[in-house]
Length: 420
Image 1 (cartoon, rainbow, N blue to C red):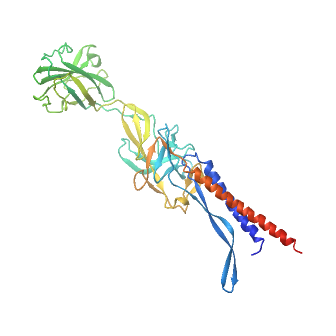
Image 2 (image 1 turned 45 degrees about the vertical axis):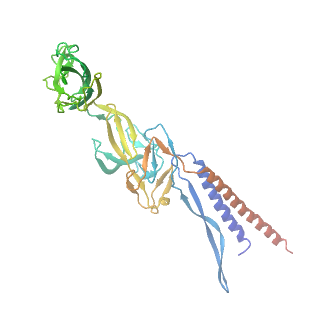
């Protein structure tokens, strides 16, 4: 090998170390980039020539070059945000994004997503998050990868009250009274109000009066104001339903449950007829303490629109409605690859599949080895600043050493030129 060849060997070393330094620079520049995955440069030698000799073949190198630039896909730390549509992956997997125009698919760990004016769940570049949609009831998952769309003006249909539950204590020391529907407040021992809903979701208030008629025996009367009833008079209560409940000597409920709650033939002011309704007093008691209600539950509700959206650990996108109901809208899809380092970086923390990566393996969060997801959180860059600075020093020394080889070779060439 000629002396001049050392120039080229050192030059390859300087070029390779310059590339490695640019990779470190890229890592450091993206230390605060959400979902960014740092890269590592790997060197390999260059075989220059083979010299035949008596004892065999001797080979000399011609420098070095960057063989691969591998992406480090290890987990980054999480940061909490106040955005409910932000999401981070804890474990394996990448979010799947679709371009609505070109229909290309991209993959990312950056989960800063928002909703556009049509309700499509997307990243800041308009790429739509892919997942599996639930049916209209939010119960059955449709196993087809689709754009996730959350219709913020979607109405949750109302449901009429069919069942109600009331748990209360009635005072054992209460006086026995005689019920008079024309004077309900003076002829009852205790009363409480509850709301029921008709088929269009309109609310109607029913007042329930409890009158002690004998030891451990109580009559209850459900009354509704005449202003809410066709043919009724405001301020005059109409009977909605009535019944009797009894207790044993220990104050425990004896009456079989549930009982019929609506027994009348009323028509609401809006023209609707109340549907069949039952009441369950299970858990109620008659103890020697003041009458009080522990809980009232009924299964009807008004119509509602979406008030908020969250993402749970299983990747379900759950909409909460103004009527208090919740419904599954979609479930996120995650993708994994046999060779993650075969993915091609596309910028904006996006990756795309290549023949080296293999085809994507789709699944749901927390299924088939995929990671879970955390809502209102983002995965930070996995760049380790301390490690990058150490690598920077090593690469700088390597660059300096190669430049020293060039200057030393230059001196040797100068001495050779001065030989007389």
